[in-house]
Image 1 (cartoon, one colour):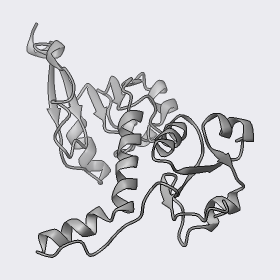
Image 2 (cartoon, rainbow, N blue to C red):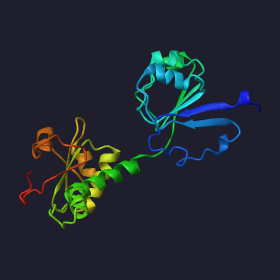
Image 3 (cartoon, rainbow, N blue to C red):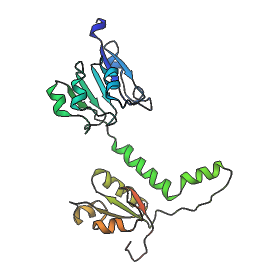
Image 4 (tube, one colour):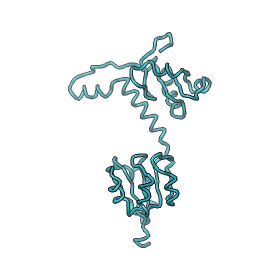
Length: 224
């Protein structure tokens, strides 16, 4: 294989510098030259100058949009790879017209998403962030936090991730309420949740409800 046969691969927006450690790239040894970029370029001209000589670009989600205008300025590009199986920032029609193949990685990010979401719920409930700062400042337990048992978890949507979150919440003896435009009472019950209307889902909060945000404990009478 000659130098001209080596495929040049660019990995964009790898700001954590982990792309080469979390996947097996050994099959490309001797066949491709892989370069990672840990910064982000906002200027299209700078981006074109960086990518002009690359055959393949690997995208970290939607951090760098690939518009029709950008694609037209990268005639050497043959393949776009995005983490996960969809990327709304790629102009698919323009890529097809230019003969650029677009594909995704079949990685299951749902486990990480739901575990991270539950970690945030636990952190908020027990004020772990502020309490960490308290300990580092030489003080001790200035907040009590709340118990998740008997509290209510509100879910905006009850798809795969929502169903998993409802399962986690039940394990912590929480009440689960949910709403979405097409959700039925039967489907909610199957997931261990109670269907409520949109107003009830949001009304117990003083600020906009995150899909995985903990609501304050409800009275034993049952209404938020």
